[in-house]
Image (cartoon, rainbow, N blue to C red; front, side):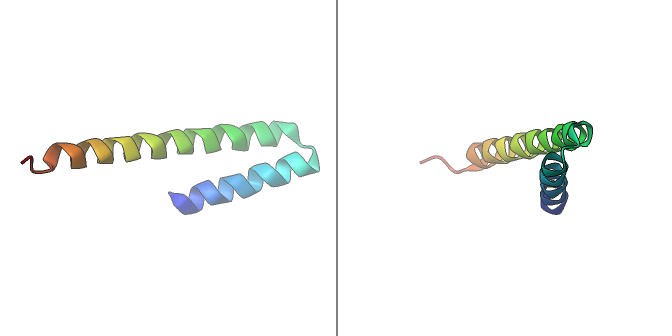
Length: 56
């Protein structure tokens, strides 16, 4: 997941610097989709860990 996100970020930066805004939009869309997925997975993991902790 991390490698794909890094790869998409690099391609987004290259597309912006080359002035190809159609590809920049495409890579930006994929990048935002992956970042949203990572955020939801992180949030879910924190909730599961918080709910399984022993309470004193």
